[in-house]
Image (cartoon, rainbow, N blue to C red):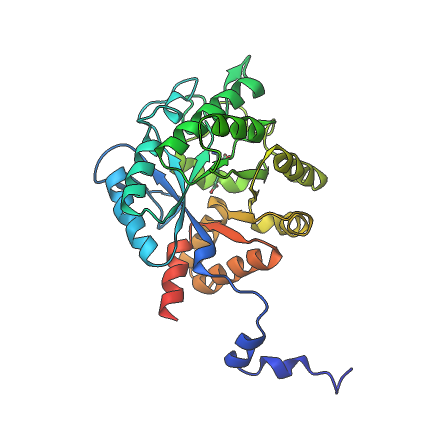
Length: 324
Ligand code: PBG
């Protein structure tokens, strides 16, 4: 008790604070999401995400080589196809945009971890994450298409498959398909607890996947639920997931923390587009100190239990780390 106990003793200067710091976030624990579209020489700014671009395969490959040299070695791929249809067929065509990008980046950066986001929403003309029947996303038809897509992504060079669709039973179905095609060594990183979130707003500009009608609440989770998140995580682990993702990150730190305590697999948190956009916007207005808030948000996510953080800030954060 005071005056014997004086916690301020250990906060006197940065060296001492560094010595007793409980949480650290290394650059190689970051995963950088990227958007790739057809064309050449493309570097199209995403309006609601300053600093984030849609790339073509050539510019993306150069960009990622640069980011890799900063120490960020893991990338998450999203594609904007040349054509969308009701089945999302470019998702699983062998010359689909993500497949071409995976091959190109793998050739250039053989040691990078290439994570293929697996979902149909960028590829369907209706913008939903699966195949429709009577204006409803049909679960079992969708998981067959996802499984087929996973195999094509693995064949194109994906190191990890990351299903983000939130269909029931997809992890098991994908595991089975990968194993049957000789990809038993390819891990599944499942978006296990993915909430139906307004924080995905800017991503819809980036990935052009706004649903033509309705919303995603019949497959993504209700933000009010906690037990359900745990249930989803355990179902995915039973079905063969190697790692799990909590998404979004900052409004769901309690979920992240609880899941981290319950499971013995690596847990990732996804700091999504809306979290990025809010920090960027307030920073641009001069209302917050952007760098400080970015670092605080990332260390908060790590402290809550994330082993890895998926964040659009990855290259910037890496630059700061090198400068320090
Ligand atoms: C679906 C997907 C989404 C995001 C990642 N994967 C969008 C959605 O579910 O509507 C959002 C990521 C972000 O907001 O940064 N393929």
